[in-house]
Image (cartoon, rainbow, N blue to C red; front, side):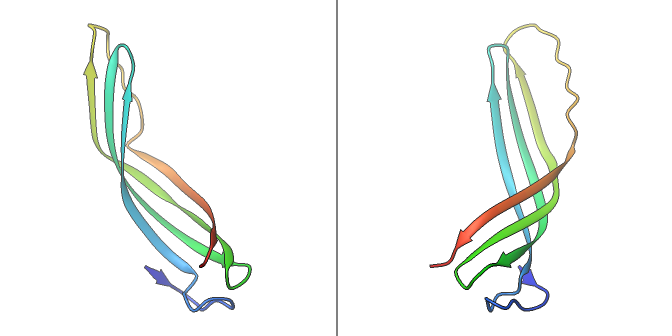
Length: 95
């Protein structure tokens, strides 16, 4: 969703919000971990011309689901945060 003032080089408004889901899976010889995160970021497009620009955004990522499957009888200690910062930087070229 784009909002805010108008840009000199584009008809699209430069401020935007972005959200999504991320699935991560990690496996070692002793365990398998699965994560699902929801992320929400607010950012701005910076247009250098009508075709080229960058996007900068920041927000937070929230853990929605976590599963730890032990392959051995090892002790499981988990201390990762449920909320983490989220940042993005992208260069774009409009066709």
